[in-house]
Length: 451
Image 1 (cartoon, rainbow, N blue to C red):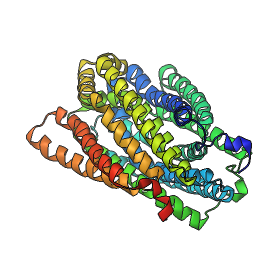
Image 2 (image 1 turned 45 degrees about the vertical axis):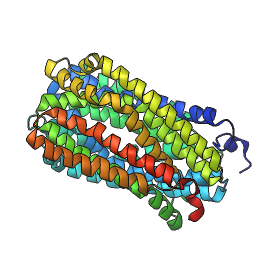
Image 3 (image 1 turned 45 degrees about the horizontal axis):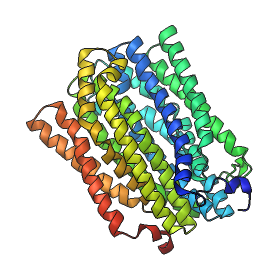
Image 4 (image 1 turned 180 degrees about the vertical axis):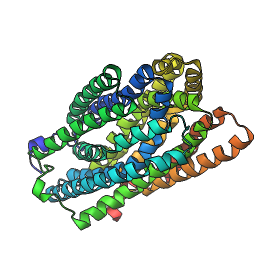
């Protein structure tokens, strides 16, 4: 890989802190705009239609992640494989892994469309979605899943760009799609009064825009990660690598989402005001998750490239730097949300009950964001090292089995919604302890050498 434009995106050279921050900052801005246009649905629906519609939109964010999270996990695994070949300067490996990943994304997007549309009513009813918001919820999520191909292909294409060190172009595309989403939301909901389904339609249209722009960028790239339409096919040995690296993360995402579906079901039992309030907090929490998410993605790519290049000490130093930055920024954001949560929740809906539920959840969990950041960073490091089964196992046990068991048992004896909220910091603490032990006891930096 002698191409200078390609080598400029390598994370195996140059000052570690500057490289990670330069890669993470566009990710942060991109995720910020993505969160803004995800939040636009709730803000506009809550203010222009009402609390029932807000509850419909908010009732099942975990449903989306349950179905989409598996395929996004596979794309994370694909990014690890591509980054490893890119760091090792293996041009053929990069080309085969990119085209196999795209083929997988196209197939997965079509499959998810049918799965989402078909099973949405069943899952919403299983979750105990309040009857008075169920029809609107079904309409919203069925329209949402009509855009599954765009959602999956966007994540696939962004994963490819990020794996080779390009975090700037996804940012540009997200800014454009965010603006389109907000404009369409206001037009459909506030001006034309088309109802809750039109908010989902605005999201689908904007997602197709960002996915199309990312795909076009890759088809016009001059480097070895360029997509050539006629080469899109499954390379079975490469597909095996992608699945091996991505399946644990995909399963982890789906399992955690399933646990959150159970949590949401318990929240649903407290009524539509609780659903609306907690759904509003979830949108705000998405902003708290931004520094965690950007450093998580940066660390996975950084570790993958450097281990592929056998830069072991550099990988260790980068891991420590990323963890420190992530937990510091996440905790600062958590403190701000704790302080301003009454004002922030009221932006979605000013009903005192809605605000009360949202503020209660915010002031239970936000001061523990440093634990969430720490767990996700270590999970990202292990994924980058090719040990994605480790975070899958830890999060399955802590964030699914223990969390669901705790809620199921304790709520029966103490039927207070705060019990549900405390499940998060408790299980974040447990996973942090286990990850720390594994981080210092295992030889994760030499994982690739034994494969």
